[in-house]
Image (cartoon, rainbow, N blue to C red; front, side, top):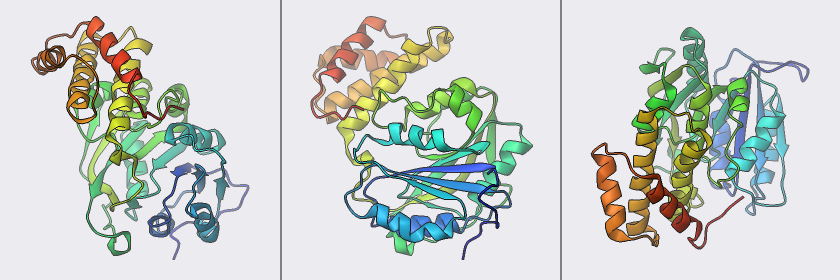
Length: 316
């Protein structure tokens, strides 16, 4: 049974859910059921962006559409990746807030209501919730309610919090649409947005709410992009590389931290993804970063060149 309020097609939504979909037929019915059960007292719209799925996902979206009073299904004939598809959906959004979630995870029934309450209560522009990974099949997952006052941390330095924290890469965001637009949306130079989007949003937001609650539950999924470690390493590196190059006015501490993360990713990519970069030099840069020593820009340029030459990388 839907937890959505009755609204007319002319109602301007408070929240726009933007959900990219690619080959999620196995989990999608369960994810949609959880989404439809959201307990909201504000108007919401649902924008599903299919990225040229080949497994019947668009048909499943069509079959379940009646559960969502205001919804659109944007179909595409070319697979372009989640960065581009999220931006495509966001351009269609009319809500004050964007809820950005994945199509292969199940959302807790009161998650968005709690996130919205915390944003308003704390005069914040962006909120992130935790994602619980589980070995359970999607049909066996019944996310518990998180309550209207879940434990959270409030940060007035969102970029520093994200640079120095963990757990902000999964798609469990509620963010003011104006902040998403000011950030330029997802970085379309990268196929996967997980690492870059939080950085871009944090540059434009004044306050972040970090929920210490599991708002999403992630079952095993055959088509999950996280299984492609080479692509993950490539896009993670360039998330921080672009942060540095696009924002030369970053303070020294943030620049040092971003460079250290770049060095860490390059070191992992040498060992796990076959990145062709001098082993000893990469190890030295990695250890320097761990010790808080600033890493020369010349090393990052060498690492960037090696990542650009990495074969088999999807680029928008």
